[in-house]
Amino acid sequence: MKAERTPDKTFEDYLEAMLIIKERKGFIRSIDIAAELDVTKPSVTYTTKRLKERGYITMDSDNFINITDEGMKIAEKTYERHKTLGKLFIQLGVDEKTAFEDACKVEHDISEKTFNALCRHLEKYSN
Image (cartoon, rainbow, N blue to C red; front, side, top):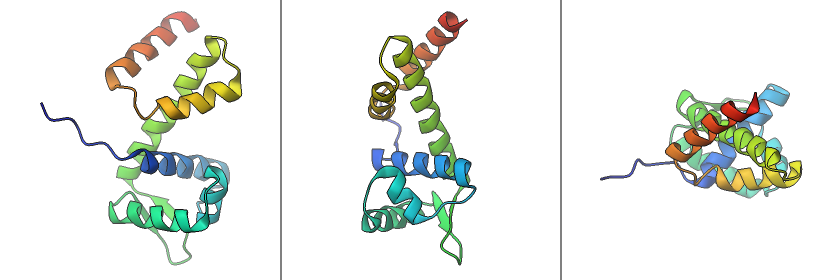
């Protein structure tokens, strides 16, 4: 059985950060990504180039970044996992800061099957 190809964790983190920045500011710039992820500007330049090559983002003539439909699918999926896992960890008694830091680590590696089971659990016990 061949595993489904998934984007690497760095791509997921960058696309998720871009989505958050877009929601907060209405636009995405490299400098904002560097600040959001606490990485250097050269790291952002390198990774955005790779994201562009893969078709996940485009850049306009003013160097504003736009997430493509394909990139948005990844960004939204990663962000939803992050929020859901963070919420679950908080319900388990973990402080908010730790819950969302841990959610960021787990969101990349948890299987779809387990994530869906967690979502069902949250729905059942959140009401």
